[in-house]
Length: 372
Image (cartoon, rainbow, N blue to C red; front, side, top):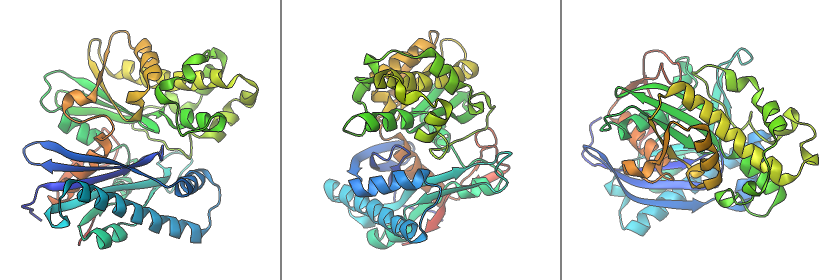
């Protein structure tokens, strides 16, 4: 399915559920970011997503409606972006929509039937925008024996293609994932553990607002080393890649289960320790995967948390942290751009060897096409 148009839309709503990231990109000999939009998720819808992601039981009617509402929201984000930049739907080759993850159960000894579930009905997106949509990027990889995530390392490799040195890319979204690029190949790509999700949830529990801007509250607390050790004893952190996780695992219930007396501690101390948890778990993975003096390009919302970055740099005395904007795209837009790029790859029937990332076998096509 060869295309002559070269404009794509990428849509991403991550585990932080802070907003829909929408980008317009041109894909030719290289990817060019043309426009971007941070599209608000209404508070009631955001609350429903938070609840569904951690609930033991969910009404089928509620889930069905939420799938439709998220599809409408992704369509609204697309149409708003196009309107703002004066581009018509006819000029767009395709939309790449990751969807909103509500469950991610990768292969494990305790999960005989692994699955992953992203909502945001792509039929609704296609019908309302009149643009071919590519969605459901993870499921085929799981069917081929992989984890279905992370997939962004494929795009990280494309971004780093012209670099002469090996490097790492650390995405700090709700979860944190690391891509290790060596000799123009992805050597590893895996979730290191929590990114912002536990930090944000603790902040919302004790403050107004969705997140701790710059880590200004957490940096007033003292890191509790005993608490940190309890959290780091979780077997996920010592598990070898390929590995992936989700908010159904790392959430407020996990914090309490690992440390039942956490509510008796000074809240700012717990906040500081949650920041340290992200820094230590990611830092360990980087030290084990990269050589000295290799750069780590940081993206995702965590790239704006100066306290988190200072604690991460403390873990990496021999590596340099760089903002991924040096590679041409701002840290907030990397994942949305990745799914625009993956939509382009799907329309070209490009397939990927993800054995070093997700653990799947063979050449895997990613995404399902919903034609306009």
